[in-house]
Image 1: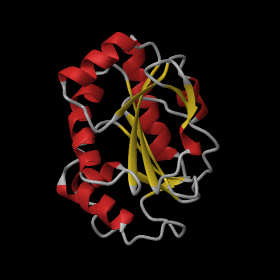
Image 2: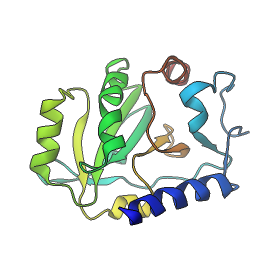
Image 3: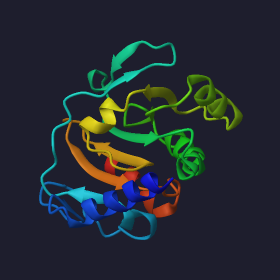
Image 4: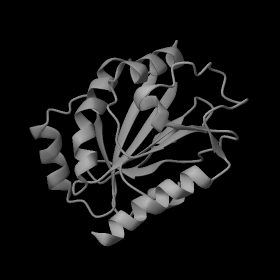
Length: 187
């Protein structure tokens, strides 16, 4: 437990101290006047890095690169069955996906690290998460590749494959400012 707390503290320090993250960006083409409420927790990249691949396992243990699929924007959420804040935010993430056509915004949830697939499936079923697909990163390789230092963590990927924003920690994904942001992004 101490390790998890230290990891989360380190992640926040890294994000706040890292000059590549900022609230405003010349490369980010949207006016951010609605960065209020939950949106204040999201950091936008000044120089968005390119995401080359998103290698995950499907529920049936089939390897899949999610960057090979056609989507407009992709919101990737890393979570774990043992992470209480992750579990708390999943229903609002599922609801956010229900508000958007997957061709405009695709939300991908990835259980990273040691997660029992049976527990993941049970969690999805018990919470009626019908709008999110069930992917995993069992050894945490993708999370490590992307520099995910705490859970939950979310990254927003543009249609051209660049990570334009990152969030470490949970938010209410259906808070009005969050929904407004994604609506403006996908128009």
